[in-house]
Image 1: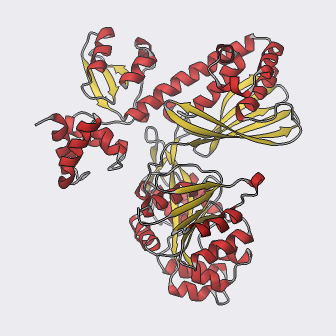
Image 2: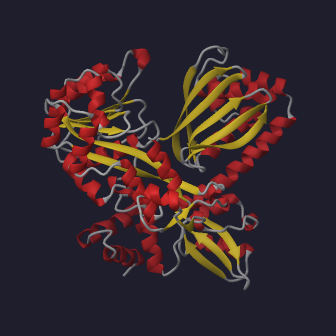
Image 3: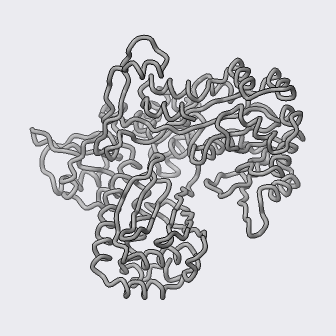
Length: 564
């Protein structure tokens, strides 16, 4: 019996795969020359983290995530970053007995063992870490070093010369591996700032000119965090480089411009949407980061409770109608929509989307991008889509009356339509549609369900600390006796913010017959809310409060939810 088969049997025992699929998966591993954990992650039997938890259990070694490790950065100098990245390991610490702890994503790999033995002669212990986390950690260190080095070089150079060179670049040379381009300090700095944002999990990069300094900030977990202050003398070169990379007019400084950059970072393709806005001290740039790789989430990865999943099951089982996701910009609506599309994507249906922009590419789904310059608006695209014999339609956002009318009428003529709206809660979507000119009887007939969504910051697992609730907190939580809840502290793993990542909270409203009847009668938002709660909807605030009780988020995050 070979090792792969033994490991696969262990995954069967852990109910990750079914026994009847065992022989087929084993043959696929042999054909593709792939490890079980990599194959099962790739084919979405489980997440990478889930696969490596099972693998660690099989080998009887500890499983940890990189964020939980107290890494001695002095040890990383023992090895080159290229060796660590290629062989997927990080030296963590040496204990009092001289035993080196290695975080590895590759169990018993000969190259890893050889690389370690060349520089360390003592005993070695291992913990298993998902390889992608190891890569992200190493990339973050390398990116920080490269940014710092480029900044030093830029400060030592003459800006006039740099700007002259930057201005002379054409678009083709700027994107090619030309040695003169690569070695230019402004080029290296801008490239490093962009690449560094990826392992830091930034969603946006802000480059802002002020009187004496250029501020670089990353938006991480919804908040802007300072990265660097660059002397204003370097502004011209940085501005020129960004405009050239994104295809903007380098000579135009008085009007806003938009552009895009495609770049491969750590083997993955990213799309960077660049926006330029004139300010009193120069042009400000905001760069939105979009991962172009395949979408690998499912609905069950997105934080829905069992009760919410039950309601969503009923919503997605409907053959036609319109399903709306609501929430502010950056609340994860698109991610949830893609998860729904992935779930309903079958060979027997024709799915067409119109998006602005296309954030993820999905096999088996026809995706269209709006183009205002070509008069390809949501409404225009939607009219064309209806002539393409669709079964399921996804409209990125309902922004105007025309789009709302077409989407609703599509839903009542036998199509399942997914879209988003900007409202504070789920019942508010009904009022918003009517404000857009959609008759209440059409809303009642077409609407299947509405899901309101927010993202709240997740407490850092490495440093969160328990504490008793005070009188004000007890009143806010609606409890009579003090309880112990987790609070943010701050450590090196969370950049001293107390938070690491975000978690979604949902408000899922299924449009029952009673709710349909209320929509066409005299109604208020309060009445809609009360009837929705009777139908099983848990308000956003209540959902967030449960996360506080479970230790996932803080009472400070709950208070921001309450303010809305």
